[in-house]
Amino acid sequence: MLTLWCCACRSALPGGNEPAATSDTGDGAARAGELIRTEHYLLRASPPEDCAETDPALGSAAAHRVGLQLSLEPTGKVQVPANPYYARLVDAEQNVYEATLGGCGEPLTPTLPTPGHPARGWVVFELPSGARPVTFLYAPELVGAPKTELSVELRR
Image 1 (cartoon, rainbow, N blue to C red):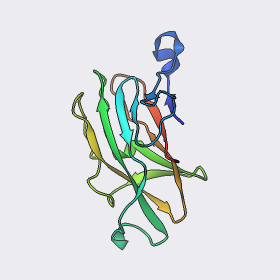
Image 2: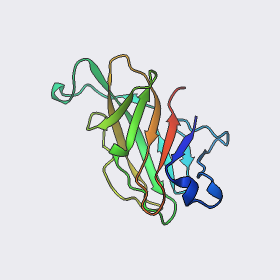
Image 3: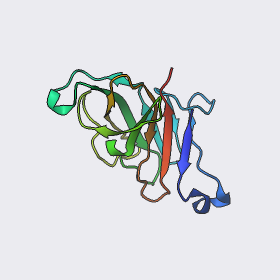
Image 4: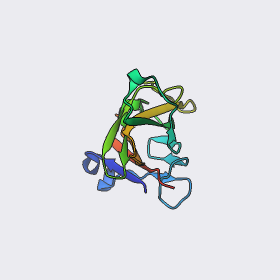
């Protein structure tokens, strides 16, 4: 299910409407693997994958790392920073996890992508054993527009 939250949008946009985000499927639901279009950027988040076993110094035995490949590209003049720390993961019990470093591949590095040149990389989360990720959230600090939060359904 696609949810787009916008702080202060009602007063910032003409007519008090919130910006719409749609997926390529046309059914209004944003799902992992689909290209998601918002007013200011395109985002694609892969389905979650378990990361390879990591150095014990990077995590505990009671947890596992899950990663998503992310692609983020602005579509206009509004600057849309790519940063793994704008990402969160929600599990089936509604626990929220912030991104951590390493474990799945080339990380999404903080950068300012431009139209035609998307930022790409892995965003990694450490979850307790048995936790099932169900929703990916991304809330970039937009430069020149109100902040929004994009929600991507990860269940199949």
